[in-house]
Length: 164
Image 1: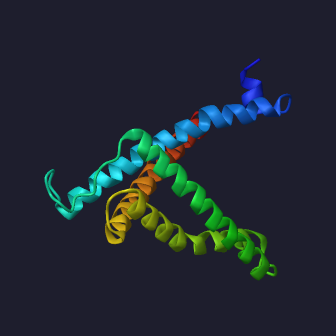
Image 2: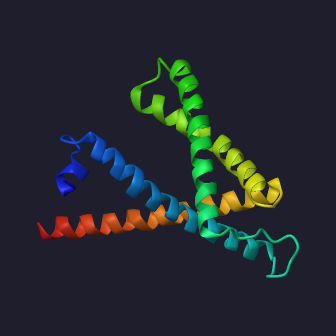
Image 3: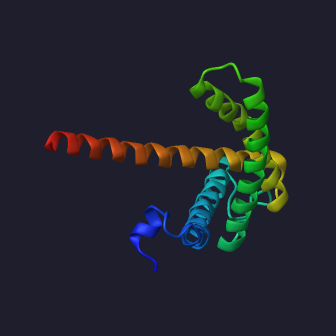
């Protein structure tokens, strides 16, 4: 039976939790990523000054194709991050705990950006440089969304603390 306890704790039925993640969370995440990708392409085209009929315009993919691009980019970036994390774990064995995990993640950001740019150039009919522009717009939109969500949480926490 699907209920809130199995979704949150997943202790009684881990297979059910796996299927919930696979068939609910992953498609929702891919849809959000696809919307961000399409917005990033539109933003890049506006920043570059490409009009609707400009030959150098980066075409906006349909939703399912955008979801596929986000999925492939996520898988490849996960593999690259995993490899960098393995090397980082070996190289940073002597470093304290928060830095041993944080430094490989920071170090992987440029590689993640380049991988995303290359995949966007390959999966969209565009050049690598334009792929870099779209990837930069994706990062910008994602950072802005994270800041807005963070501000909302801080305001809610302040209101709850003020009420208590």
